[in-house]
Image 1 (cartoon, rainbow, N blue to C red):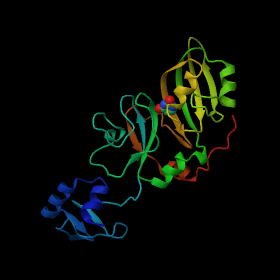
Image 2: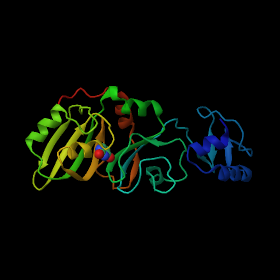
Image 3: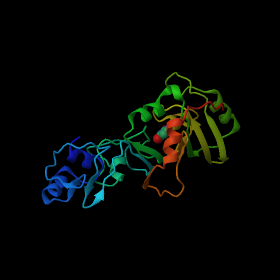
Image 4: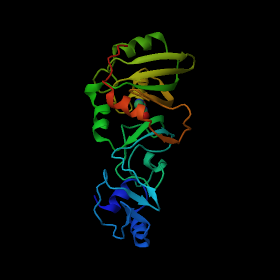
Length: 242
Ligand code: URA
């Protein structure tokens, strides 16, 4: 891999900055100053340093973001701020969000460059559970809980998979926790809309084994821990019956 690609993928700097650092002689490979940014390096075995700081190659990166409302779940967007814009710059170029939260939805979003993990988490075959907290206009009742368990039509003629609904507070406005194993477009909002109810606030709390860190402020991110990454990789899908 080219040295400038390696360093820019690791988010150390832009390619232009890296060329400049090479010219200035602050980049070393195995202790030898390298002035050509195009020099080939072996990311796993060569010791690359910038200003004496070792740059360790991480093939994959995993970030937990507490998505705020008002940003779109996309890599780039011509007009809107995206979830990737909330990560620090410079950052590696191959990151993407796993799945999608609506612009007005908050909460847990995994951002990674691990394509196979993303596919596995989103695969309909794996039934990965996603749990949301929701505030609903309308009184949510045990009958709704039963309907969520059985499945119902949300407007496209296809029944929903069994879903969990826990009533936290019932009133003119209700607070609930919803667990679904699908990822249909606007799914939670459409599930309540099927009963004539509007979702006033929606926040994702978990995805498979990954739980939103309660210490992560809205709009903040952190790297996933090795345990979280290993749990995500080992997840075997849900076998929960609601
Ligand atoms: N369901 C929705 O309706 N919106 C989301 O953002 C996620 C699930």
